[in-house]
Length: 125
Image 1 (cartoon, one colour):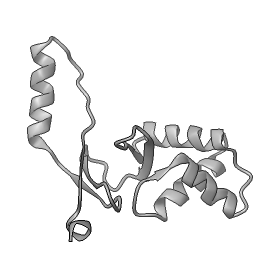
Image 2 (cartoon, helix red, strand yellow; image 1 turned 120 degrees about the horizontal axis):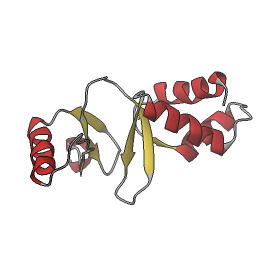
Image 3 (spheres, helix red, strand yellow; image 1 turned 90 degrees about the vertical axis):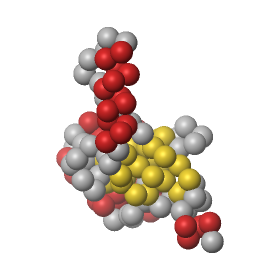
Image 4 (cartoon, one colour; image 1 turned 135 degrees about the horizontal axis):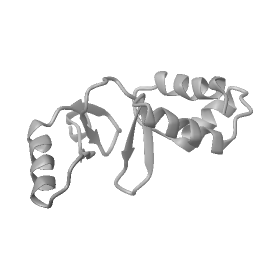
């Protein structure tokens, strides 16, 4: 995959606030005249995720969605089920729990992801 195609995916994510599916990103690129394929979009998203440039979130129905990462620090997401508004949050208690539960069962090099879903104040009103 060329850097140009990865940059195109990176730009689509930089231009939007919320999480987007690979299919949404693909549709945006094709609408702008790109000849990029869906498989290439998935490969670019995986590479950007591996490098820490993209946050990946699993929705309630299991779909992977992506967003340009706003911080280089480890964080979690609070996500509105209705509008998709996302807030990056720290979770020191989660960090301590993950390390403790790993140690309890003899695991090392613990990593984790946590997404908390709810309804934001604007949608609840």
